[in-house]
Amino acid sequence: MPLFLLTCLDKPGALETRLATRPAHLDYVASFGAAVKLAGPVLDTPDGGPIGSHFILDVSDEAAVEAFATQDPYALAGVFASHKIHPFRVVVGHL
Image 1 (cartoon, rainbow, N blue to C red):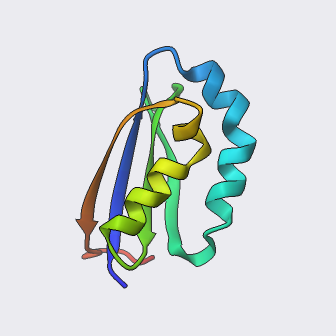
Image 2 (image 1 turned 90 degrees about the horizontal axis):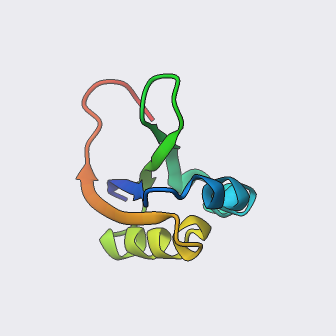
């Protein structure tokens, strides 16, 4: 299956909702098992707070990534302002 990079950016002022929704979000991401190759927050500074999320997903197609993004508890709670999907290829390193 192909890899995709999903970048989700938070709405300004969404930190409280993000923190409250985090357990449901983590359960949701974990439910995809090995299809989630990498996931984590995008930070505003190296030691700062989250302003979004990055995922590398190994799924069948872009429609599967779109479904993943729109059904994420963060998205359903209104944390994300936007998301973008890009095909991804590992050149250096491994997943």
